[in-house]
Amino acid sequence: MGDDKASYRSRGLVIDYSMLGTINIDELAHAIVEDIKALKDDCNIHFVRAPRLRFLPTDEFGDEVVVRMPAKGPVSYLRTLHHRPACKDYEL
Image 1 (tube, rainbow, N blue to C red):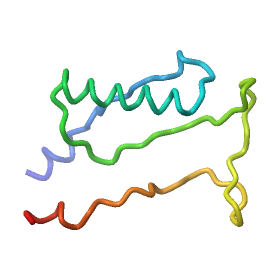
Image 2 (tube, helix red, strand yellow; image 1 turned 90 degrees about the vertical axis):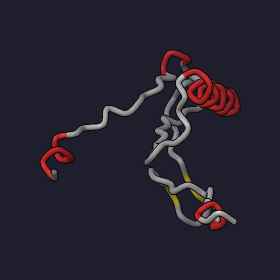
Image 3 (tube, rainbow, N blue to C red; image 1 turned 180 degrees about the horizontal axis):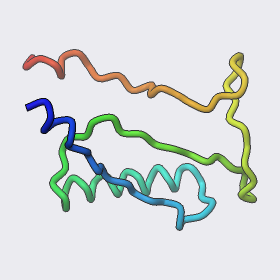
């Protein structure tokens, strides 16, 4: 039984936005929301596990910029600020 699980490899799903080139972050947010709606409606996906979003931040000319947080300096990894309400874990 353990061997079956060890041999399973999730292929997951990648949505590639690289063909959009350098775009405004609000436009990216809109594209992500629309794609999530399409996944839900067209592909019948209702749950995900361990999603990640990777950015290559640039200025308006496409030159890479360093992401900095006040009082922390440069950062390359952020944890989400979204928190799942505890009531979602129970039928309340």
